[in-house]
Image (cartoon, rainbow, N blue to C red; front, top):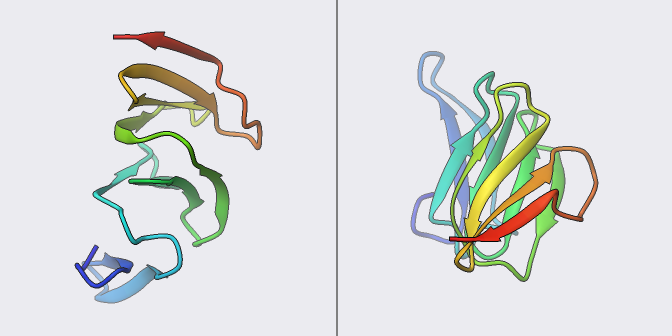
Length: 102
């Protein structure tokens, strides 16, 4: 995130841009990567789930994300949103697996 309404991810070792987004990144506050670096989530409002190739897999609007983590097996991700802990499958399902207040 560069403060100009866009998100750019860099391959530091090879010194080239892996990903650039200016459409969805107005309010991004952080980027969370899966353990195997195949997926990442841009945290903000809305939050977006991406494949490492820059393909947007899902936008989750209506939730104000604070933080998130992707499971080691890439089957789901867990997020802190609107004073709840919520888990979603990584597939295209929009419905959460669970949501509990904290």
